[in-house]
Amino acid sequence: MKPVAFSYSRPATVDDARACLGRDNAIPVAGNQSLGPMLNLRLARPTELVDLATLGTLRRTEEAEGFVRFGAGVTHAEIEDGDVPDPTGHWLQQVAENIAHRAVRNRGTLGGSLCHADPAADWVTVMTALDAAGIVEGPSGQRRIAIEEFITGPYATALAEAEVLVAVQVAKPSPDARWGYWKFTRQVGEFAKASAAVFVDPANGTRRCVVGALGRQPVVLPNPDAVLAGSLTPDDALAQALPGRPRSSLGLHGVALTRALAQIASGANNRGDEVAG
Image (cartoon, rainbow, N blue to C red; front, side, top):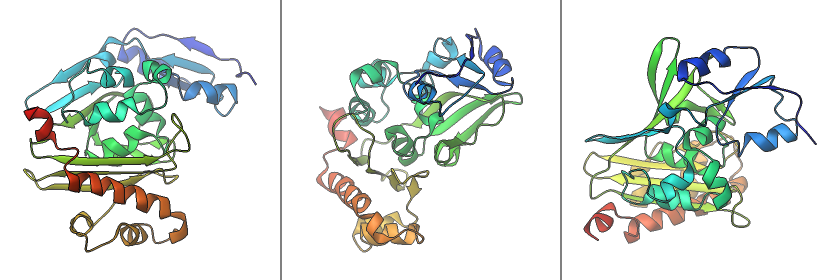
C-alpha cells in the first residue's frame, strides 16, 4: 500500500514548526521509523508532514549540575554510542542498544518515541521509571510535564495544539542508585510483549516500579516499598494496580517485574559500579 497524498514542510525554527502544526491535519515527523509504516498502511492520513528532524534546537543536549536535558531530536544511536551524556552512568545506553535494529536506532529519536507513545516502546517505560520530564513549547511558552503525565494513553499524549516536545529532562541519580529493566520479545528487534523497569535511589528516597507494554500508558505501582521488600508479590501488585484486568493476562508482566527486581537485588545495575570502574 502507499500513503495518501500529503504536502511536506521543513521549518527552520520551532516557532515555524508550531505554525505549520496549527494547520488542519498537519502532523510532525522526526525519525519516521514509526510514522512511515503507518503512512504506507494508511493508518495515518495527514494532509501535511512537518519535518522536525533537522531543527537545531531539538538536536542540542545540555548537562547541568543536577540533570541532563536531551534535545527531543537526539537519536537512539547517539545515546547508545555515548555521543550525549548519560546521567545514569550506563543504563540509558543499555536500553538504547536493545531498541529494534541499528538502522532504526540511527534514525529514530527519543522525543519521537515518546510522542508516538507506543505502549510497548522502551523509552515510554524507562523514562516513566526515571521520573523524567518533557519540556514542551507552545503558544504560551514552555511548560514541564512529567512523562508519567505526558503519556495519557496508547498513542496519546498531553501535547496541545501547536505544541512541540523540545527536550526530555532526566535528573542525575546518586552514585548508589540502582535500576533494573526487563522486556520480553518474540525475537530481537520486535516490540515488547511485556516490560518492567525498577529504579531505586536511596539518596533521595526514590523507589519506582513501572510496568509497560500493557496496551495503555505504563502503570506506576502505588506500593513500591512492599514490592521491593518482597511482602507484595509482583503478581499481586499488578492485580491491585489493574483490578479490571484478568490475572491470566498479566503473567508475563509479573515475570518481567520479577526479573527487573532481581537485577536490583544482584547489584548488576549499580551506578556506583560504573563510576568506580
